[in-house]
Image (tube, rainbow over all chains, first blue to last red; front, side, top):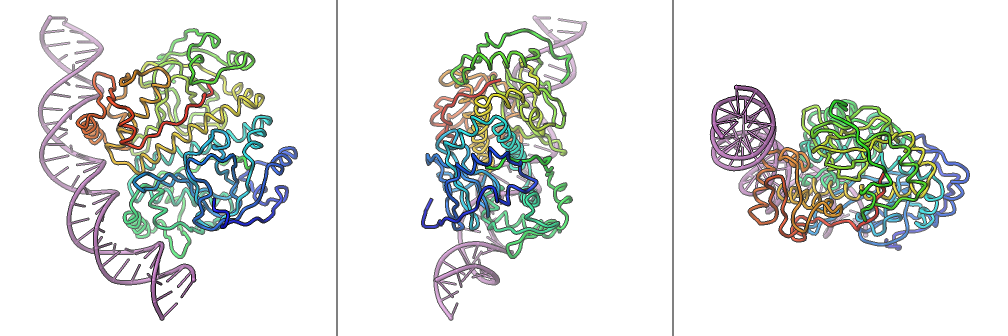
Length: 250
Length: 250
DNA sequence: CGTAATCTTGACCAACGTCAATGTTCGTGG
DNA sequence: CCACGAACATTGACGTTGGTCAAGATTACG
């Protein structure tokens, strides 16, 4: 990461508002101590900063504290595939702490605040606290279910449906974090990001957006997304929200 | 599952040849005892049998002992997306033991032998043995990396590349299990299965296969797959084998 | 106020899906 | 051993979806 883009601030884990959200698993006092101990610093990076670069072997992982980021692959051809959007409370690069050099990159989509965690201590906590390890596994299995659904979206839906799916799915994730109201949320992604997430060219992603707008299903303008009837859009594209489980947060 | 398709046989975990493979993590004696205890039966099911059906809430999971299976989603439209191919040693429905009712189905592609495990005991082992839980997490994170690569394949490769990718990826998985020689392996999938795995129609999957054959990259005939030069095909489609890690096996 | 980035659209071409017909394989019963 | 049917494989023809190129409009920002 380009440290020039970063500066440190301070927030105590015990005071962290994120942990209080219903979406996340409450922490035992011991675990909170362990997590606070492994937290090395609090970083703020500019939009566009690469937080993690594929292939780098760094024994560090992160929790996204504030802002948006995207996990992605970049092909030799220059094409990019966004694997998923990372929202506050999600772990970043947990895999590289356990498996070594990562296979994906992560880029901040907005100004982003990160908690920096020492990978070795994360592994140590996982290997010493079975309840915690089991909860992280549960969270990871839930991620797999979300990814399975995205595979199906990419393999089996047409352009308009893919974009619609991506929008409701993201909207739902925001809603669970209290970052969206009934029909509206912030949406900082550019058209090219949407295209890279749903496997379309930028031009065709545009057309899909136009069609969704024409059908009264979704509209992006001025950096915010409006979905008049989320349930209807979900039904239209076959999105089924996963049952809420309390996610592990580092 | 249709029990009529199934019958019981017996194989002891301690004698299991699968566990001896380098691909899998060796077991501590205690863990082996715990796993042997949670193993309820050994089943053999016919090709085509649904081992797990999406939405079913069964507190049971499986280890595929022998044969091939596929994890898939089925849309209301009747379209099917194969999420991945399951080979011997892989866990089936582990997610439903930890998260409840599954979101995917699993179907046997060949005659398949399964170890049936009691979900509650699996969870108990995970929550009591931190080293084991961490290893299962590692395995799951590795699965995520494989799935990430598949997302990229679906989103960014053309038909011929997608089929080629699917073939080498599967070939590599077989090779690691000692189920393939240098250029050849069994390949029991039908054309429709390939199409459902790579997000193409059956007709177009056929054309992609024809192109791969014409280019001397891959050939399927008589139930077996030949890849003259796996490294070349891998390079052609951008497949990068993951570093081998010892996978947890239940 | 000007420059660069992004958004938006039209025109045209390639990739992919659908329909439909024919060939091939394999299992079953005679 | 052969006859038959069912499932699967293969291919052509044609329509639709999505990619590419290129240009103009709009926005963000110094």
